[in-house]
Image (cartoon, rainbow, N blue to C red):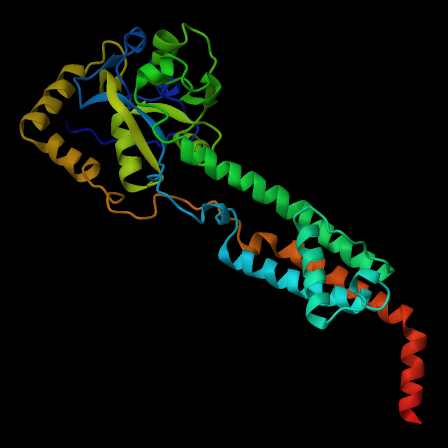
Length: 358
């Protein structure tokens, strides 16, 4: 059209209604983007002819197909973490034999294998929170037990929470099959994320909640995707153009549910009685007739990077790095128990050293 544009990119937290108001108040001349034409917006601004035929879809977290897995109970922890835990159990059992062997009746008059088995039983029982059928008798043994209790406190709570999370995710497959499930309250309304000051918010208030703002408010699309991935919300509704692009190319862990609904269109926003409105419509129609708009749609929206992705499921296993501080603490406590043992046996050790010198 011969214009020399001065382009201003809105901030990330700019709402769609905010863009409409910016045009209506002459802050900017036009607004171009994924802006849905609605009757409410037409009251204060005008729109060009449609530049994109739009509708709305539901977006949810991607869930993998549930298969029979006999080792699923091990998944809350990574293999490396299970290995380190086993090493800690064996280490604690050996240390317990040394610290308690001469003072604990349960470990006396036994073979090395039998004493080791009893110590292993004590370590496993303490870490699992079950306990064992004998008690430590020495101060070093009690100090080591404190370290085992610390492991038990954190690991049991973490394992339980992570296992519950895995089971919840597995059971959540196909939670929503369409917009009717949301209308019927199949999931709590507070777990549905809605972009504020958007066409989706208008639809939600008009068709679902009857004007009640009982949803989880979101300011930006990035916040929407982050909230879904972090299990803050369970579902959201968004324009099909944006939602297909993001789920096909960026957020492979998210997917669409049900069929599209609420058909609408995008248009370029300009002020009421704008001098160039008719010329803009003619230009858009010529671009549509020549296939330019279809070419742009194929270029940007028909790509599907995530189609063959095998990483759509994000493991929730706790790894060694996340628990490294816990095991370092246990190691320090065990070293302190050894130091305490040596201190209590210092006279015996001194006598042994004296005899060896003689």
